[in-house]
Amino acid sequence: MTTETIRSSLAARRTTGVSWARVRPVLIHVALAAAALVMLYPLIWMVVSSLRPGNEIFREPGILVRDLHIDNYRLGWNALAEPFTRYLLNSAAVVLGAILGNLVSCSMAAYAFARLDFNGKKFWFAIMLVSIMLPIHVVIVPQYILFSQAGWINTFLPLVVPKLLATDAFFVFLMVQFIRGIPRELDEAARIDGCGRAGIFLRVILPLMTPALATTAIFTFIWTWNDFFSQLIYLTDPKMYTVPVALRSFVDATSSTNWGSMFAMSVVSLVPVFLAFLLGQRFLIKGIATTGIK
Image 1 (cartoon, rainbow, N blue to C red):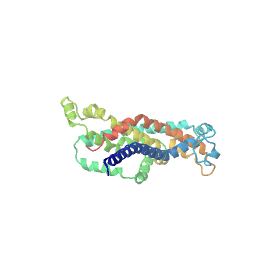
Image 2 (spheres, rainbow, N blue to C red; image 1 turned 120 degrees about the horizontal axis):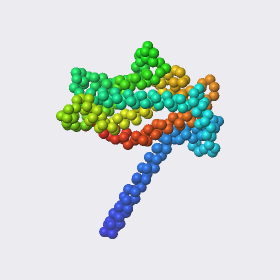
Image 3 (cartoon, rainbow, N blue to C red; image 1 turned 45 degrees about the vertical axis):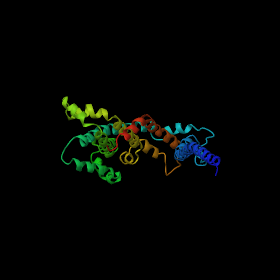
Image 4 (cartoon, rainbow, N blue to C red; image 1 turned 90 degrees about the horizontal axis):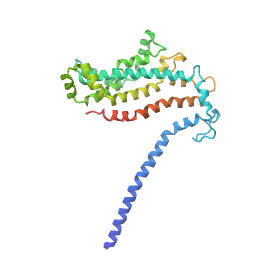
């Protein structure tokens, strides 16, 4: 093999390598875009179906709209016993109470586990972690009996009051891991300046926990807004229905279901979740990224 042949072969290999290096990212992005389209197709189809007449929703599986049927939103807003505004406000009240409850109680419990020393600390922390694996269906019956005896059925209290008792162990664990990453020297400096336990928590730890608190607020908002099972169990009066329970009311087994209106109101119910995730995405990523084991 001559020198020119070897040089030509090496040049061809370099050209092939450069070409593959340019083509590979394009192929990866095309594959990711195709996967994203597959995952987003049900959502896109729901949005498109909310703009179609009821008799055409299940006839065409495509996502092209010939004529915009905006009346589904107007009819769906007033299709139930109460205007849909009532259900949005009910969900907003439950979500606000749940967020405030989790932020206050979970942060205090996390501070106790991360910074304070008390008898049985490791045992109670283990019990807290075990409760994460406990399905809600196991405790829903005794909880219902307890709340029924307290006269809380058909009120928002069963959905809000438990949040004030740090019952969401996931958020407690998340905040514990975050607080453990805060240097203890800050606590000692605050103690020298005359701060007690409460002062250290309020003036030092809590301001530094903004990413973890934002993550807790966003997840609480999404999980509570989309919660159907608990709200269906405790809310029986149509005036107290939240958005998930109200959407279930569109499906009637004894008569025809107004699918267009239901899809339209489903799109409306997704808007707050989308906005919450969009506005809090930066804090969400930062909170998760800085809450690992250190």
